[in-house]
Length: 324
Image (cartoon, rainbow, N blue to C red; front, side):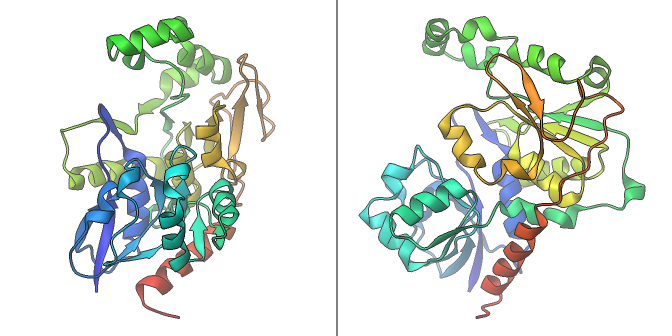
């Protein structure tokens, strides 16, 4: 039996390192990686029988679902986005998932929509919660604060001026008037000294410049930074979730308000020390923050993730070792 690992189709302008972080979580359970399988081309696979941990976000290529028969899948931390559900959960898709039930779902939203289709499904949380293998001793921690893609759902110049069509749309919906919204909101919730001293990291990278191996290398570099940090502040779940696994204090900046986004967080957001931002810019925290995040702000992760991480580890090990 061969062992596969998910890789990902680049977007039109960028790719998301978080996808590769999720594959790193799967990779730790494999005795070896015999080949990469692109998430959007699983129906096209025609090689030898292969085991594949099917965690993560599915899928952009609706017409290429379901995976080939040669793929032996383990469905854990599986997310069907609201944009993809009508296409993936047709008769063919439902019958396929029923063959491999129970289906472990990354979020409670996915578990619900699968159950509504008669599929045995349950909530597992995200496989990145098992990335405690990147944990370092406290003696190796440094004093760095990382700010990772804060409020990335807000308008940016890159998004607004990407094409003339984007610009016109941004004028019509008012986004062109909100180009400094990220900076404004950051200054509302984070003290200026922290903003000056923090190191900024992005998990969004340009396309066409890195091989899959290089993408995995960058994802690991990010994890190793976070593992040694004093504090991480982020709006990326695939930064925040690994921080929980590694014991790095993390604050999740939550300003998401569209269903496409919020459905991804159902059951996950409650794991974090969170700052929740309202439409008007006002905010509240679930960890007793008094004012802004300062250099003196100390947080302790809630520890709720352990109840999800340990069953995930066991499930993956049983699958890979062919145990019953």
